Every structure is written in structure tokens, then in C-alpha cells.
Amino acid sequence: MLIRFRQDVIDLNPKAVVLLAGTNDIAGNTGPSTIAMIMDNIKGMAEIATSNDIKVILPLPYPHMITHGNQVWNLLRKLLHLIN
Image 1: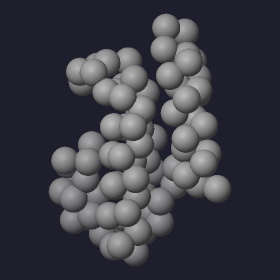
Image 2 (image 1 turned 180 degrees about the horizontal axis):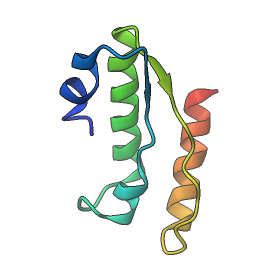
Image 3 (image 1 turned 180 degrees about the vertical axis):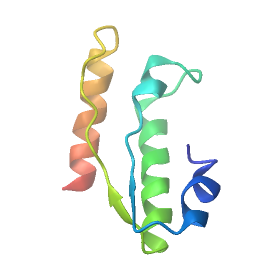
């Protein structure tokens, strides 16, 4: 998502962007990713959006993935820390 963020979001000049990210990474749909890698990508997108006067909406993912539940909870904790 971070690689495409400029063309998919910034170039369209939106007032806000919803960043619901991380669960596909945890599931390994795009290859292995650590929570740190996921958080770096989310922070990067949030910083780019904010610097372009785009409001960031950061919904929290549901820990619905039984196989990866602990990783989702770990991501949730880090996202809550980020937005607080």
C-alpha cells in the first residue's frame, strides 16, 4: 500500500483517507511481514497524508482471524498507542 499511496491517494487530493491496513499482511497474503513492518507502513502513509493536508482515519481491524488472532491483537495494541 505504501508503494502505491502517492498515486492511489495523494494525487487524487482527497480531504481524508481511511487506512484499514495490516490484516492481509498478518495473513501472509503478500509474503511474510512483521508487526514492525506493518506499523512502519501505516506510519509512513499517515505521515505522507498529514503532510499533504489529508485527514487520516485509522479504523482498528477486528481480531477475527483465528489462526493469526494474537498477531492481530498485537497490531491493535500498537495502533491504539499510535492514535493516543
